[in-house]
Length: 208
Image (cartoon, rainbow, N blue to C red; front, side):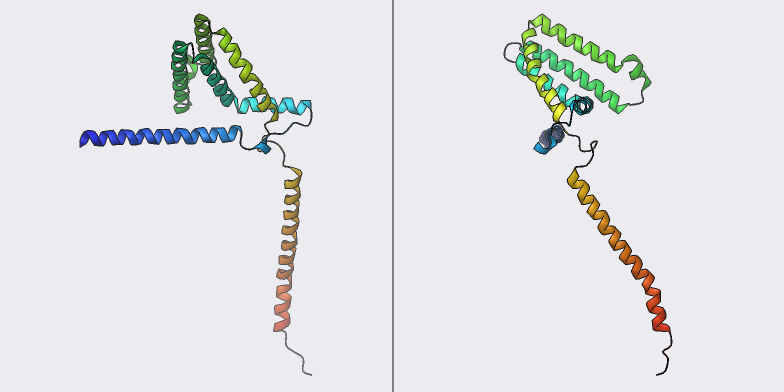
């Protein structure tokens, strides 16, 4: 009974982790590409450049995951050892990120393991493994497939929370403000007219 209960608890925990991972992936995908209306061309070249830089900062994790998945997919058929090594290296990077998230104010982590140093070491390991495996062509193919997607997404992805409201939304807000002003004026009139009505009702009537 004890072993069966432990197996059931382990299976339930694994199912919960899988569900949580699926929900996180769905949220990340919804943020990356929520709806077709979230993509629109910029007004001019300067606006497109500003939007691209902003989206590169905001979605850098999404772009990195996309490029990483393309690289692993290109290596999977013939370079399985490289895939295993790169997945192990990515696990170490995730552990480092988890430590930074768990201890955001740790001076030891920030001094000994600076983010730029860790990123440089990770990229050096990836490039060394790819060169040793003779998979430079796979890396170039992954970049050729991923970079255009990143550029197009960064240039056309509209940020609703940073850009101004649309003319339709502005018009609706204006109508709402006008309606609120009319209601407020009516309420003020009722408040002002209230004492007058009460004073007229309380005033004595003159005999006819």
